[in-house]
Amino acid sequence: MSKSSIYGLTYEQLKDWLMEHGQQRFRVDQVWNWLYKKRVHQFSDMKNVNKQTIALLEEHFVLGTLAEEVKQESKDGTIKFLFRLADGNLIETVLMRFNYGLSVCVTTQVGCNIGCSFCASGLLSKSRDLTSGEIVEQIMMVQKHLDTRGEEERVSHIVVMGIGEPLDNFTHLMNFIYVVNDDRGLNIGARHITVSTSGLAHKIYKFADTGVQVNLAISLHAPNNELRRSIMKINKAFPIEKLMKSVDYYLEKTNRRITYEYIMLKDVNDHQEEALQLAELLRNHRKLAYVNLIPYNPVDEHSHYQRSDSETIQMFFETLKGQGIHCGVRWENGADIDAACGQLRSKQIKKETAK
Image (tube, rainbow, N blue to C red; front, side, top):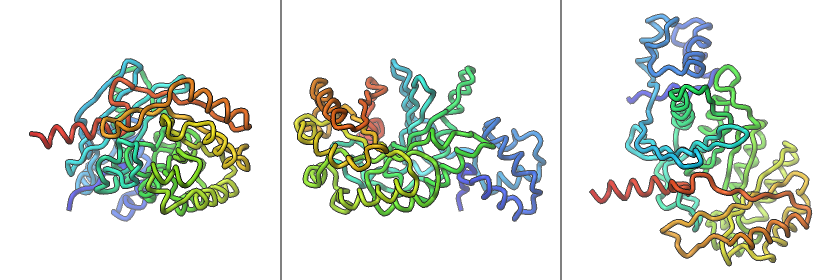
């Protein structure tokens, strides 16, 4: 049986595991500190942990299951990592620099089955979920990269918006959140973590019930069922009416603002008519709604889609604002390094297949 990543254990799970294996209670704090504060690369670097405990950890766990395959750095400071998993699969992780801090976009699945017709991530079908350890390791790999620069920079924000549908990998997603949010370790604030979903209504209910204070973003991209169904297969299973019922529940339960992602596709969903429909859809929720207008990143395999021009995006923005909807435009980071999620992975797989 292959060893699992120790990063997949929450603090409580690690404590229980150590005590079940005859270790004293204080060992969990020692090990946790070495993992997340001092960020060691091997168990033997845990200097104040006895040899028996280190041998036990080495017998059952590994510190790293990810290997850096490719690293691309943009002119704006964005860094895109292509990591190879222990089973040979490839995933992407992106580090982005903002005036409020350093944000990392993590992947939760190998491939994606949601099937959004404009998205590079779905070019390769889902083959499996990532474990919580593999998701946490993405943060650790990026943080260790920052550590090597000697500038004492730290990951301060996380967006769970990489390859895959996060809420479709619910248990591992939640363990990941508990690990990175733990104030004894990485201490990344819950309100600095955003989870994105394509609209799995039944999982939004479940997510609301967890009580975590992280942010929720919904990939909406269209204000009516006919249009949304034509660009997002998920709308067949969870049409807008069903999705908005889960939104009602989430808002009642959490009273937390939801961000609605809306990708701007030229002559598809960017007319004033759609802007007005979107405003009407969110009218009852506008106090806790924010629309993020996203200029489309063209993908070679989806060449029938083009980015809306700046004048159209401005019109859409002003229409929403005029209807009392809070909104903004998110210009992409790393435009010169395959910015669209999934592009780097797809190109690498094509290269390997061609060999």
